[in-house]
Image (cartoon, rainbow, N blue to C red; front, top):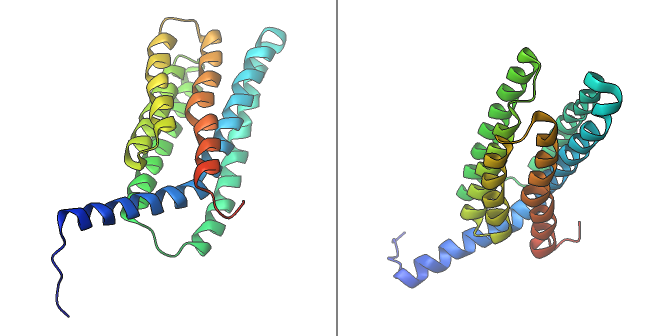
Length: 193
């Protein structure tokens, strides 16, 4: 079988097709942005509202996160059965978000060990890195914009008290996960799910 030399235009068209296919596949995975965005949004606002009322027990709302992990695992298993082939872009994004997940777990252990919320700005930083990078790879501006806003919110979080960082966490997932997740799903999801 002979190899065909591609023209620069044909190469660009192939790259664009790969990016568009990855966007479509990732839009099916917009489920993760939406799920985690809403879980974190609800937990951070609930923690903010309940903290003056029940003090340290308010942080128990974060127990929603293992539930999110279980839901993500089950959904991921079902998706893997449907999609046997992944593009390079999907593989890169998979490794990016796996690393982000490990980093978030490490930060959670630090927070539990030292009984404080002073690590909250680092979560916002991870949201910024993950969504900004994903948006760049997918060429999807809402993720890039959401990630950019999170960089600013991260800096701001270092200048406010732990209690108000909860509001910045909620705002950061709203702009970087929830809104882009719904836009990604609406723009590229063709199967109506």
